[in-house]
Image (tube, rainbow, N blue to C red; front, side, top):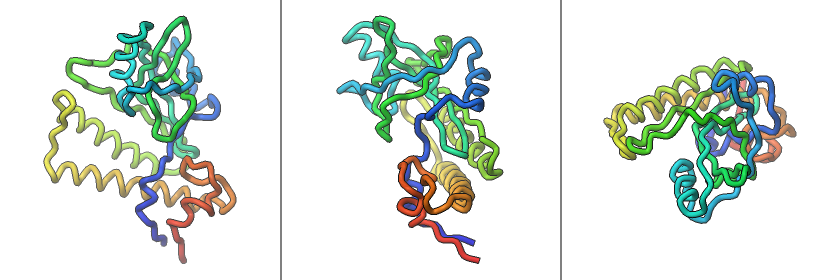
Length: 218
């Protein structure tokens, strides 16, 4: 049995992979076998908005020239999953730059070019993230399904940048995602020693970070 402070849900868990693993290579081959993932520096543009990469790069091109390159931003939650997020970077003079600020202030991203997967600016429809479990904890599959269900629902109920949900449907998705994520966090916490790196992306020791929010008992 365990108790968990839900403040832990506000933590950042995913970050840029430190290296290109076989799991990442398989995911990239599944998405676009004609390209290989590359590390791209993050240099946020002063006018750029977090999570708005397509508009950020489009404005950058209008102002400073160059071009937009579509693809996928690759993320990793250590021991949990790898994820590909539809993304765009700025290209000028053969150099790639991510001009969109990151929540966790990453200085580089792992990017898979995929020029054919363009963004629908007219309808502002997004491609949902592609996640693959690292198959260490069974709870991860349920969490991935809950997040995929929510992202698909957002796109079904969106017109432009406005999403319309009933209160019941929104609550249903929020509860499903939260409960599934709590299960993943508990599985990770039970499998993490006090001096090991924390289950979130803080880089701190577990005992000095998320461990304070989780208590197990027999």
